[in-house]
Image 1 (tube, rainbow, N blue to C red):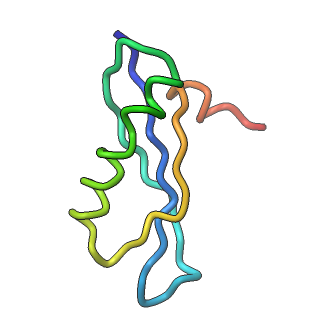
Image 2: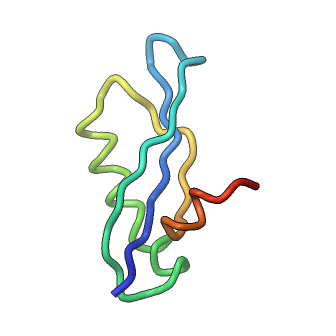
Length: 70
């Protein structure tokens, strides 16, 4: 099992210029490709729990890769 990071960029509905990243960690037996396949229901569930925010972008990554500077 791998820990994967589903990274969401969500913006406020009342102030669309206010955006920030949210990280959802979950276990997956697959690759980043399988994360992409598993992600839409997780994104929808998160968005439903945060009605004042709109998810504008998301991607999957390994947690340790997110922490490295580009």
